[in-house]
Length: 192
Image (cartoon, rainbow, N blue to C red; front, side, top):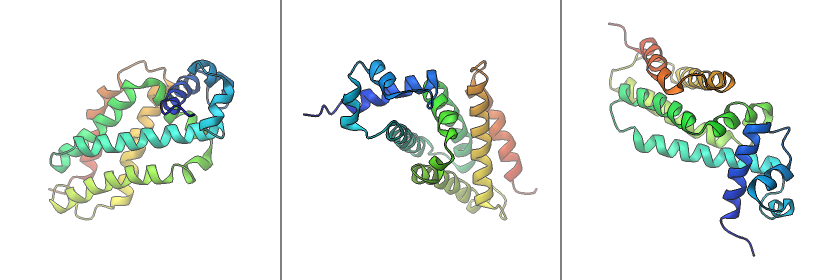
């Protein structure tokens, strides 16, 4: 009989192992040892190590996008600021998860064209909706190329987070949010 709590136990252990050893250097037996279970038990819940990684990403991205939707109830400029701030705060609060998402997932190019497509699209849709709302309210440039701006904002946040992880988290990532948001918002502000 399967334990309904076991998959989460395995996922949590996998995040710690992937963050510590790297995805490609981790073995299923390492995850099992970290979770305090037999290696064979993992195969009752996941087919492969990659299945665990995919599940980690899907669950965390869904939680992240859902939290952002709930938290951003202000006007569009404040929403963009809040989005950047939350993006950084969530990663900073979960440094092991940040290492997995920002570094380990990037090792396999096919991941972002396959299993992660839906989750990334949901996040991009959230960003685009904020930008479209700002354009409609006259707070952002009328001619704003929303698709380009969406990718630019995501790219800026993503690069800041990756630099923070690779730099051994030597500063507070959340402290960079105001500057990132200000620079982006200045670029999309309507001409005065």
